[in-house]
Image (cartoon, rainbow, N blue to C red; front, side):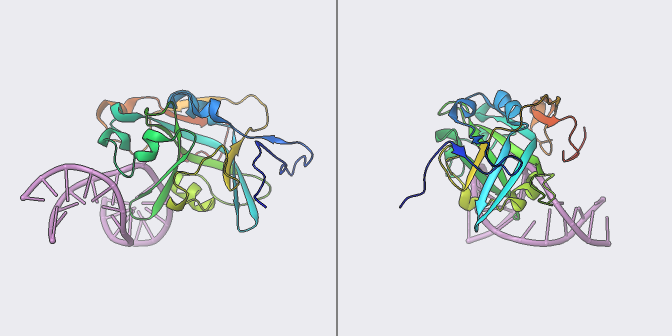
Length: 203
DNA sequence: ATGTCGATTTAC
DNA sequence: TAAATCGACATC
């Protein structure tokens, strides 16, 4: 019997009877700058080894495809970047510095190669874990390259749901760790929840 | 086949 | 301030 594929999951401990609404393609189909901003405050859900890990996303960065010198897509369509060019709504996970996996969400239209790097989250449900920083976030959620190309709209193990509806002050800043990217290093493509203590760093 | 370097983290 | 650690990519 295959697992049920539904956009609704009943796993909100704060209110078990309240269905969580899955983030669907309509959000992922937006350009990276817009998607990155809208993803602040949403909840990342990971089901692994019979457990559910949840965290509220508080920091993201937008990567704008081939024209963006900070994006891997600027190197062209390769085996590694193929998912970015072909699969909006799917995960793009890659290894950096030989030891950290980076969790990205492919966004935009097919061929745009836009992506959003998820950089920090607040652990929920009493889960105590430092998720402030992209390497630590992926490690905490047990996300690895094995999760590359996962469909976030249909996977039962990795997906996003709507956060609690509330006003969230969002700040934009330059992106972190891309000083090599010429003028692109100054673009305001990093988004943070201005009131969260879980943001990886101030700037 | 070989050299360079990174969308980071941690320790000194 | 620098090491860790390895795969992607460019170049030879």
